[in-house]
Amino acid sequence: MTHPIIFDTDPGVDDAQAIAIALAHPEIELLGMTTTYGNVDVSTATHNALLLAELADKSIPVAQGAAAPLVKPRHPAPAHIHGANGLGDIELPSLQGQAESRSAAQFIVDTINARPGEVSLVAVGPLGNLAAALQLDPTLVDKVKQVVVMGGSIREGGNVTPVAEANIFNDPHAAARVLTAGWPLVMVGLDVTHRCVLTPSHMARIEAGQGKLGQVLAGSYAFYRAFYQEMLGIDGCCPHDSCALAWLVKPELFTTHRGHLNVATEGEAEGQTIFAPENRGYIEPRWSQTPLADVCLGVDGDAVVEWITATLA
Ligand code: RIB
Ligand code: CA
Image (cartoon, rainbow, N blue to C red; front, top):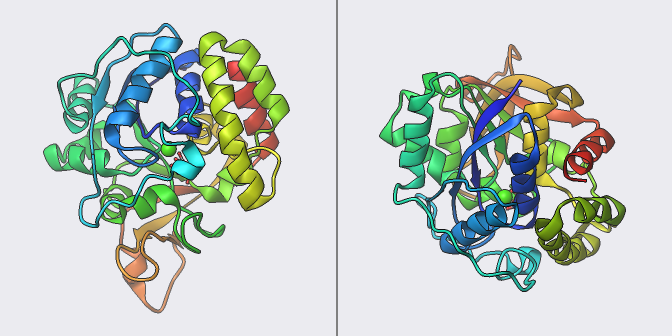
């Protein structure tokens, strides 16, 4: 089966690897990329998305989107994790192409309406573009095939605050709209991405298999890996965004649970994703009133990392 997708992204080192997968995997048809601020500002995200496709000799539409969160002020980009250029501060080749004139949200609306029921939205950055697309065309909830969100955390705790994951924390108001919109949605969060560790030997195989793009993936990975060594004490990194594509193509590697998602938008728990399992009664029912969604809580991490590596090697 082939999966036509729009990839919504803030590249970003782990985004770059996921983009390489989306460009390379025979079962993925990459219809376009939409960009958002997050790991970098949005113009750098757009530059990187265009450049990564060029390095793979592919011509893919890229539409620029959200430059800031819907409500809260924008946090500074995490240059200590992804580098100021989003790709580990390595020297990059110059870019030839340019972005679409359409906005990211309009691109999402047009692309899904052109193929109703067929297109999956895979979102691996803050969720402003998806929220804006819903605002433009609420009928997307019935026309998108599925929405795969890399973001959030239920049992694992956060990576920005004790409870909040970065993509959700960066725009909790957009995330609340997207995670409760009632479209077919799966959340691929830290509960599973932290179980996947891509080691230097995996990256050596990827570098060897990806030509010019492989040099950028490997060079940026070296920078990203230093952060993981310091923060989590692991020799390798968590390929968060590639896990969303692993779920799309190999869902059997994951365990999902169905239930209701909510997002804390204000206060100390800002950005926390809250999961109420389906049919579990609570004395306070308000957390169980959002539409049902699927949440990944278990994964065969070694198999996911092998799938990523084999796709790119
Ligand atoms: O928490 C992981 C997510 O935040 C990934 O999408 C990564 O690219 C970072 O932005
Ligand atoms: Ca990302």
